[in-house]
Amino acid sequence: MEDIAAELKNIIPNYKEDKEINNENYLLSYHSLITENIRSNNKKITRNSLGMIIVLTVYFLLFFKGPDALNFESYFGIQDPGIIFNFLPVVFSFLYLQNITIWNNNINLIPLFENLSKKMFNLGEMTDTVNVIKPFSLLHHILNYQYENKRVIGILKIPTGIAFLIILFSPIILDIIFLILLLYNNYLEIIPVVCFSILLILTITTVVQALNSHKN
Image 1 (cartoon, rainbow, N blue to C red):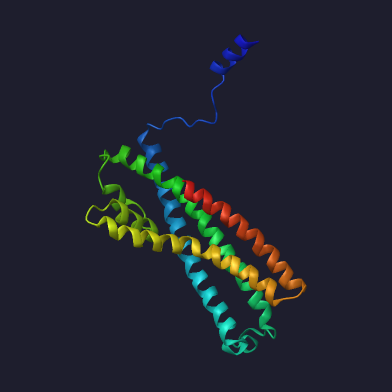
Image 2 (cartoon, rainbow, N blue to C red):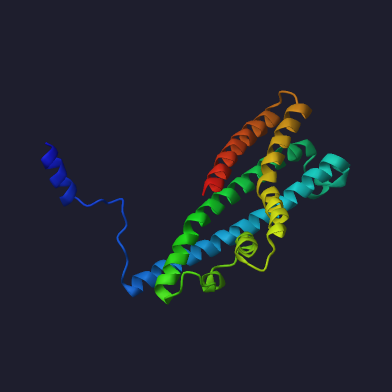
């Protein structure tokens, strides 16, 4: 039986392993597809980040200034701003979860882009050309400049790294604060309970995604 299994292993290819692409047209198509995916992901991250800023601004206006800060009844016909107040953390958490998931996808795509670019254009291992032709991303640009630029003094990389970690992971802390506020400010009403449940699920999923991002 062992001999038969060994022969079958040699006959049947491993379908989970990709074959190396040597055809120039296929390489160009593959490179274009990866480039477009990275560019699309970067646009989504920018759009979601802007949405998070808007949601956070509206939330804190309601929190500190009260319902009179934004006249929802006049503009949207919403008589109870508490509904918006409970729903905004869910929107914020969802946008951040999507950003983390897209970021993880980019982490997988960028090495493929770099390897394909070096192979197609005969680029050296230490060249900076790959970063020049790579679709622009603010976070990746900051990281590359911070850790790869020799002109940046080592001690200056520490505060920049701390600021980057705060920007990346502070929304998780905000999610936890939102959960506490939902519990503290509301009784067992249907809308707060639903928002709390959704927010809890999104927060846990985000933490898992963020840890995966950190590992990569």
